[in-house]
Amino acid sequence: MALLRLRPHRMSWVQLAEAVLEHGSAEAAWTALLGGQLFPDEAAEHARDQARTDLQSWHDDGMAFWAINDAEYPARVRDIHQSPPFLFSRGTRLDGDVAVSVVGSRAASERGLEMAQSVAKALSAQGVTIIAGLAAGIDTAAHETALQHGGRTVAVIGTGLGQTYPAANRALQERIARDGLVISQFWPEAPPRQQNFPMRNAVMSGYGHATVVIEAGETSGARIQARLAVEHGRPVILSDLVVTSTQWGRALLDRPNVYVARSTQDVTDMVGELVQRAESLTARLDAISV
Image 1 (cartoon, rainbow, N blue to C red):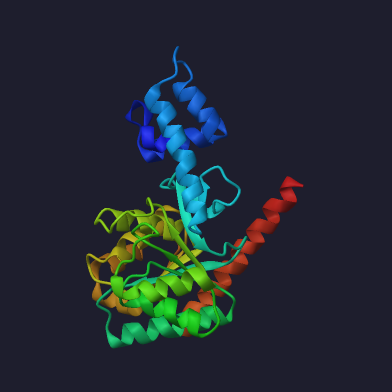
Image 2: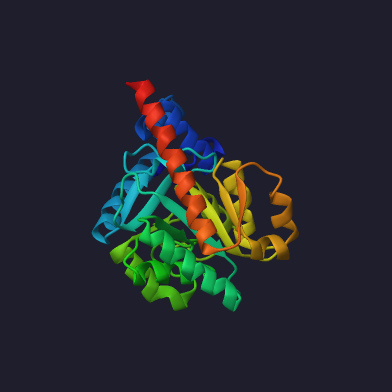
């Protein structure tokens, strides 16, 4: 964290995350980047002191802090190129949960909302964690439906954990933190900024085994997540609403691991097959490593 506040050599957060992974720990990266100084640097020492104070304050406020090299940091997120150097969380972390993003337009149609609710209910019944971004519309419908039916949901938000966007979802965010998990890659008091949300979409894609896009316009954030998921090698399931109404949806059909669903049953069948395929691959890799 001190590295992030100090940003030696004006390194970006992604570069600092790569440095920590390369050197094996934040302490080793600190030594490699700053250890050649003959005398202690006052700014560097202040950054370290402030980091210790911040960590204690966040812990006291019920927040967990995961650096990219920590065991608690989600391995699937660490695997993507855009993995942030740290994550904040409130709630319960589960190892190895099968998770799928259910995302779409804020200004959703009635059919879109009904489909989001149906998909979230069906996947929750299969024990799948529902990921969404706490946005209005499709995201809210997916979160609320998972909770209503006893399922697990994870909110990956575009603000710090001390903020809520939209404000109308404050109670929902608090309930997810109590019964599921809320994740943020931003400082706790960070407000919503336009550039935050594509970054949030990258983490959502990385955390999940697949992304289901229920309904989205030509400039929707769900479009960004679908493209990122393809880049990450994650399957993308587009509803027929997306394919028939957007040029980007039709263009994405040429990419590998992109599928079209015309019903909730299509989605659950596809997710079930994808999960089985992932579990089979994991079992083979485990057998090879033994």
